[in-house]
Image 1: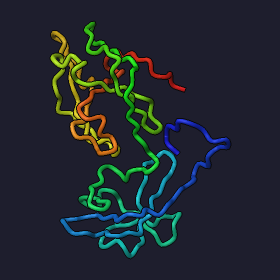
Image 2 (image 1 turned 90 degrees about the horizontal axis):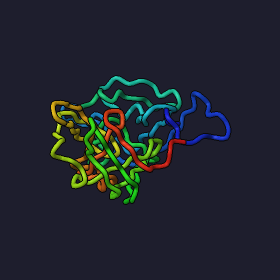
Image 3 (image 1 turned 60 degrees about the horizontal axis):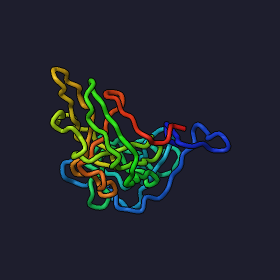
Image 4 (image 1 turned 45 degrees about the vertical axis):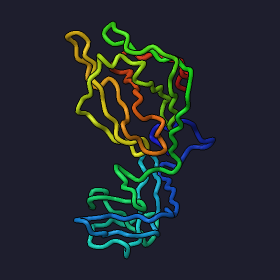
Length: 217
């Protein structure tokens, strides 16, 4: 159901198909410090090309605009930004609900990674971490001790991944040339991605990245 599925079904997926399942955990939405949604009876709704969304019984939502969930009678949808913060149990959820079928597998690897920028070698090592994330191309991460960190400076750019955490970006300074945000790392990754802590990965659209990962299918 991903916008970029890694595999295929033996018959075409219906364009408007919806998959729903009971989300068996406590879900809360807080506004001005008050829980305006607090339920253990939410649904997790999956639609093609979209991240999962919550659906709630109408009487579990207090004082918020709602829209009927057309595929689940008696349930409504609340816009993500209608509340100040979302929680599952006591853990804040950022961006969108996490998909329980999305995995990030981090495997120690002997695959070689070489990175060059403006004629300068930034990385050349076979001590890497191979990251296989659902529906995404595999990536190699590398410890900073194998990187020319003297040529990298942390930038102000940050992005958030619901499965890995907050990424910090690095800009390359090579002579007079500045290459923005060529690499990223996770200072404090989420528990399921803890193996990524302080490792770097490089953007092949901004620098030359070569590796021996399997080619795209």
